[in-house]
Length: 433
Image (cartoon, rainbow, N blue to C red; front, side, top):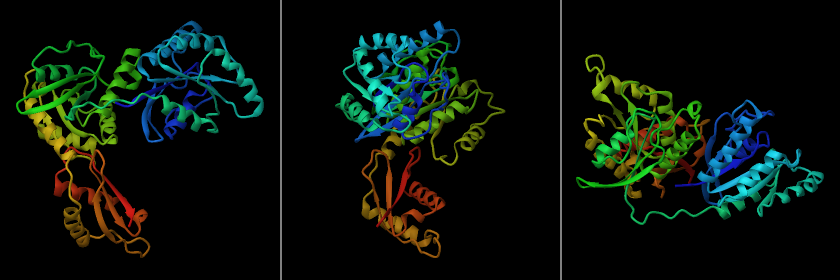
């Protein structure tokens, strides 16, 4: 599970700009008035060989000052509970405000590491003004300008230095995460598999708050089962408790080797299912799609084949994913689902020797070589599997930057056909020989 860094502070101090700096992208909306970041945004940052999740806890409830202040206070409390490191952001141009003071008081009592970040320090005069913020009493106080980026490298050095090092589980067994929208049947599936009432199962979406780890050791299968709270649409993450659910689901996907994505047979693939699908694919995790509540579907009008076609239309081009129609309540095909998940795990961890790869793939390439670029012939000389946690392959050639995307897909499909990577996202890279 990756460590979590949360950026907290009153509105309009530059949290979203810093967030974008840290993750190296323009993901948060940046405007000059408060309350623009409507929901909390999370992404992965990499620095000095460490990877961690960054949360931008944005502008909150708009309304009376009292409501607004209460919401920001709540935001700080969430960060204290959920994050490993808290970046408390203030603005040198306004000096220390009452709200800064109150937030500082909450954060000083926290057992978590807090780094005070004084933003908009972009000239000598502001450097001098920023010294007043030492009075807030935080040992780690850093001056920076999130717009220009000055000081962010030093801040990241400090963050990486104080991040906790997660200890890996001693036993290296497959980790399988059950993910999906709230109320799709994740807890029912876990209970059915473990044969015990591990979870409260109700019709209220979001009943499961935490991700729960259980060891499954039956029918010659042994793995760690991670059940998460449902991932909510961002617009529906009203309660802070639901925000935890989203975070923990993201953690579970990062931690897992294979994800079981539950789809509700009665509603079909929705936009939020696609968001989870994209997250799993982006993180290069193994994937099995489980269509749950299949017992409630009118079979005359909806066949499994039609449903599968509808799923494929949505998830194209990565359609090489097992799809199993289950009923967690009736325990229909749930063991089949686990067997398939273990097969996907085996496929994701398979290693193919360099000699075999070259023998097979170079013959395919010879029959259908890459299209030339400006009359230059692209020659692929050599292929090898990279030592990554997921299947990744490097093709060495004379013009790696000129290989067309369509040819990359061609090679990926050939690798899938020859070595059976069903349910496993794979990566193809071109390198200079």
